[in-house]
Length: 599
Image 1 (spheres, rainbow, N blue to C red):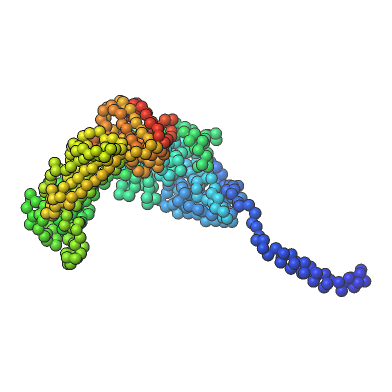
Image 2: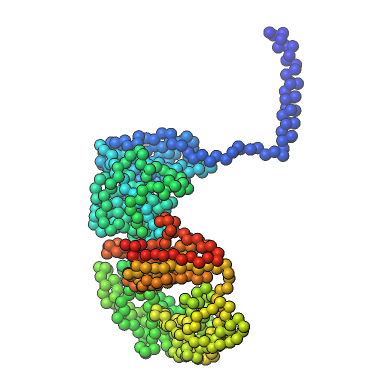
């Protein structure tokens, strides 16, 4: 053996050199090819082990730890999505031990209580961030596991869009104050579909709420949160079972399965109007123009005056909600640097009661006004005119007319001096007749409607003559002429609704597909056909609001008064899809029985 080694020993260095040369040559030959990491990992983490076991009873209340072991290393992507029901005073805490997620609590758990810890949307793998689809661990600190289930959906009261992340709460305390004062007896967050399933709860009567919980304290703060509620007490009627679809965790893109889940209750979320009444803001926006705003709507003012200004020289106007008051001084003389506004109104005192209060509001002149007067060269033409705007949109001129709004209230007006004329396609001119409509809510706004039926191909003109309108600044108007023609695009369409069963007042809104913008509106109180002309091809939604108090707006709800927001419905052809597609050059006519829709 020794002789064998001695024979080949001199060849070892030569062999090592040859191997190094081959390795160097191979690496040089691949300098233009980057290393590859293989296909991207798209598989979410898999849960391999849990502790305590599912539906474990007699789990310790003190220093409780829950462990979730995965098949790979994971990270907590969203700690707020680790949610314990019923919630404790402080949120669950987490730490990682290898591939195991440990969830623990600063507070002791309650005795003889069933708990559900949900991990949906909370965990992702360490490399690609693939989300763990979710899991709910059920355990009890007592001898038994509660076994009932209640489901539902949370939507926005105005758009009926589902709300993700709302906290749905159940209270065994049926007092109206419970949701303000303490945490619920069971709670769950809604998913992307606004859907919730409160599982393993007691078989008893509950009050149900949904809260957009801004500060995460699992109670309702009316100053910051939105809320929804069910009018009556509810009692769960479904029992937990392994086959229950509502308990399964679906991919949120799985529309079929997500929509197939049973939704027993629908809660429409709204923002309550503040209940405390007081003046919260003020601003003087011009020489003789100011406003004050109130915390709550429907402000009750007994009297209002400005020191040194005659009462008949003061012009005021509330907005529709009566929570903002515009103020003008009808005097063209230079006003003091500070106006002292005296307001006698009903204000909320420290006991929460409305009491008559006298308040003096200082309204300082805006700095820019003083600066503007420092040099005559800085004064613009519009600073010495009665300023107004005229809006005449072709697609809405027939419904809204020529919309006129003055910047300041008028002290002299001459609407009979306007000239309305039109040219036919042969350029033959004719003087037309018109009617004036004053806005009932805005004393500076007016609408002019042609009395003749407007026709495609005609040109329509509305002219304001020089110096016929005078505002509170003592300024007169300049002459202006506005031109409008009806849309003549052959690709435009018409959408009509033949409405019957109209026993209340309704607001009919044509919205964009996302339901974020109002294209056009009608207010009706009798059976009629509502037509939206000149509609571009596309997808729309039609919202119908039952305006019970006939104020022309969608009113919000009130929790303590058990008042739901005014009911909103969307037109649908299949009972589910709120989107209505309008094709080019089409005339769409739909029939709708509102008494059936809102029964």
